[in-house]
Length: 469
Image (cartoon, rainbow, N blue to C red; front, side):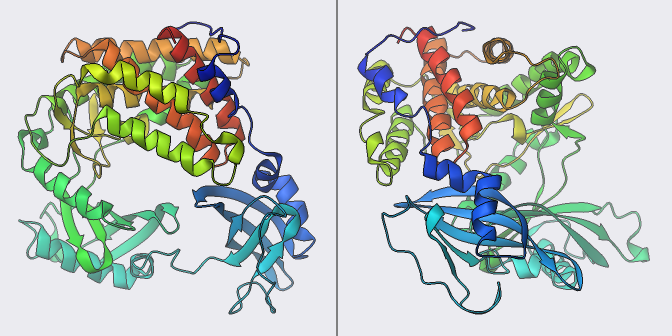
């Protein structure tokens, strides 16, 4: 698949994809730290700098979070997250600016030149569990009571202290925290975990993950052969908090991949083939486990979802209306042959979900666990490996085309290792991967990632040419 694309000129499929070539200038401006910072300083004199670290398309506007550093006359800068809505300047009303300092009740700020309406994010980030999870005393009680109630073998667990550390927070969506635990002296030798991870999600994802983890933990996979799993320890329904045990790891496969791409002659690059083989073995073990859980995900559903994202983008950017139609239609015709069997599937199998430790592989984040054909997980891994790798620029300044070819070779090696263990249709993998790479392009828009858009389009074009489209 390592080919250089020569896109047919004037074709409906390629003309449609060409409309995704560049984000609108007003959207790029809101995502540029320098441009956005200069505009905001005209309204917030104490602003030192800002990082537009998260965009998310919501209806006709984008949600944005700016991490702002604000000068204080009597101490170090204050860091806060400013939440805003972005749309094309001049196309809709903005809120009238409120009075008082940033963070005071009812504070709002209109920035007309960016089409931006700002307010400060609530302290809980839109997640009800966060105040409980961030306070060491409340977290200790939550963890102890939750684990004692849910996990066999821990009925007499007693935690002396729980020290939280935020690993990830996507306000309004999910947060992940790590806790270093200590126990009373008399608990020595009980084998209780020194560390646990707590996650909270908006919606039903946390409950889905808990149910999936229980099914997996009750299966032979939990013995820790080809794949290592986190032990499910607690589900706290009223706060939507999932608690799980540790998985031995010193790095993720995504981290190893980035180091290997940045230094192609270094030790990380030399480790990559072996890590890919272990990862293929872990996926094969999951697919061969015989488990039955969750709903079935089909390629047709995946195509419908991608088309839906494109339709949502066309609301704030009408020029995109119908742009993905020819490609989705072509892939739908090719998908008419039907699925390649069904297996228990991770359905979010990416290098970032693979934990490496010595000669072992751990897999995390089973909130999408269900049934699908083998090609789904294989293709998603391939697409994300390429997408992740393309965002790394090596010290030698490798050309994008050359780097894409190198990543395609790594993806092919993973597929070869997997196919030696579990039969999989190359044609079905190619179809699923086309949808995943199209989704990467679409989410470069929904998440306002100009740099990723360039490389995602390159990967998609190369893949479609390799498919003969």
